[in-house]
Image (cartoon, rainbow, N blue to C red; front, side, top):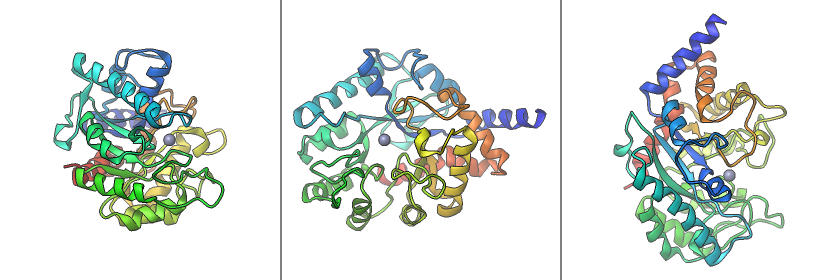
Length: 324
Ligand SMILES: [Zn+2]
């Protein structure tokens, strides 16, 4: 047990020393659903400001996910409600800082940017991207699971298509503004099509390895290598169904180690899906337990500088390359 404790202590010390970045959380949706403000102590949620600070998280991407029955103006309204929840907190709480450049990531407190998990908030009008960019959107997945005007998500059963003309227009605008393309949730046809249509790093904000858990949301080894070839990052995810039966933190560590083996140390990060899933793997109650994951990585023999890449260094490299 002494050894286990020493890994844990090393993990906690590492969290204080290196940048910690998580690329996907649905906390704003939970806040909206439950009628609670974003930020303050909220033990029922997986993350809140005090615990993010305590865990040493320096950048958390907050998703503006909208439910699939929300289309057009209704989707836009819901996304703006979530953006308002965040910006209301940012006005009052020094720790709820909007971060839109990697130079704004600071060692002592959390920062946040916004993302789309499905571009429905644009109500099929890519020109609105400019407004959402101003609100802090810096990472975009064109689709969630279903079909929209931009592309097909992975549950589109009948021969899912690639990127539409409007989707290609959006990709071009994202390139101009410097917004990261996220290929989580897109159908495989669209995954490969998007790689053809774009240049530079692309990412998958939250997914695990298909080789270890055969879930359609997980990445095949071929996809992991393709993201690596483009200089991107895949964020390991805490959704139980993407990990395996009766998953524990050790199983998340196994996924990360496999992704490192296939994609390389520079192309794996964290995209926990905090507050986007109801249950997390055993041993992980929320962001406060993140150091247990780091301890598991160190126990697997990962050197601290390498663990630091997985914990946030890789995300900051990509964000630094793409964000303008
Ligand atoms: Zn998701």
